[in-house]
Image (cartoon, rainbow, N blue to C red; front, side):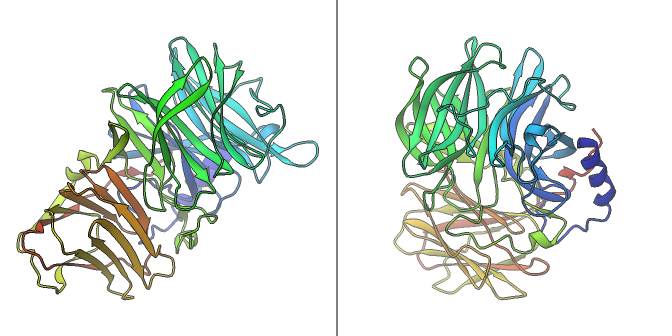
Length: 482
């Protein structure tokens, strides 16, 4: 099935028209549907990005694992499909190869994933499987799949998915999300050989969510970090816990909790560990129809592709909080720069530029009493996206039927630098001092042309505005020849 799907991609890529909506900096597939990032790993000199993928339509359907590689987390090479639903335990048109993780052991790359198919009673059930590769290109599924047939209660379960696997000392551990009695849980297993697994128990549960999807787990500066996407908590779609995993009792002891992204278009985040020991996170920069704020995918499903990944963000731990920062490589893409020092506007909107290409806007702030207002106005439709900076940052969308209406990003009183990355419809706001992020998609009609203006009435409140046009040529290579 991999060969059939890859042939389809090669044949139809030339027919796929690049739309005006396709981001330049954010990874997108050449055609088809993409959602969750999977199995992010540095293996044999390359960063591997796997992702949930359906090549034949621009909407969710039977799942494959797409595949891309990078040397710098910015420039991506699309590769042939890594996993296709070829076996009886994953061959349902409503199922396939769902999300999971990757781990390297003794030179072999292991992909752990959830297989979804109908059981004898005709019900969709989810089981855990594994595939292996020596070169990071061609993968063979384990002959004794599935390696986990039933959930922690010994039952087949339609919501038992997204394995995360890591190694601690000489033992391997796996977290799997599960829904039991309408409560979201993360179940912990252990193994000595990656193929045979023993249940340890429920590591964490969230009574306010009926499912915890796409867990990730890692150590960061002496603490354990557990992340997941809860289903059922309004306005919270990417959560993190800082604390300690008790490897004897199999329980995660929570010391603090936070949100990775305060927007509504950042889901199922997963992380890379670089050879230098730095941690970077990527999420799916879209949302699901069950989310309170969801209003659709704009014109994306009318194009040849749908779905994008967020910009990779560097993750740091500062005390009991995680901080996410825009990678320095983005600033190195500078093509042209405008610096504005005359920032006091006495209440009127000061026009800066028309944004038509990927752009980074940096604001240098000082404490003050009056708000700062940033407006992005679509020249064609008149729709506006407004950011108001006071004690918090408030995003408001006006006139965009597929935009998110109101979202708030907490700001620190010490915040001195705000960065706004615009890549066509994809918008990401970074508070560099507080380490918080807001991601939102603002869809538009036709070719992008947004007039950017700002207002600030208080002298010294806004020290300067830097608008940098970014050069994003050749960041995503579309050949899938491996």
